[in-house]
View (cartoon, rainbow, N blue to C red):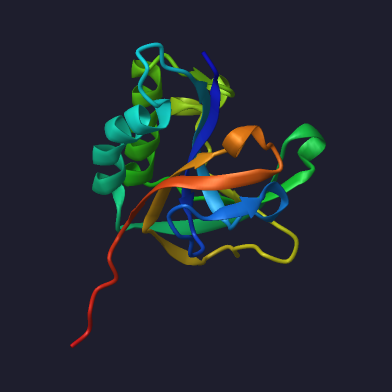
Length: 169
């Protein structure tokens, strides 16, 4: 059975359902959990995991987030990021998604960075970045395919849960 490389993220830039983008041009986002998964019952694992994730994603929409200090992640701190200040709704979302992945037998690629080890952040992408003190709203949670159709050079938004903008009248 083929394995799907998937990731849950909270986008802080606008995206659309079914949007495809090069792996080098990610919209700014907070990684929630990255995993590999396959199903053995013939169901599409993306549909199955999206069904389990939906209540967690919908419950978190609208949560206010505060951008913290710059930090260096990865080998030798070479990946520049902004930390996201601890926020209970974001932590519950992360933990709910981890439970959904576990329920389907998914393999989380960085288990040390889950649950109590989770450090939400937004990686800098060239000149695109957030700044300490910025406020953002958790208004776009997505399931993204890291290799749609086996193509590891692109990414595809498979599911998007978003908060409807309020209408001013």
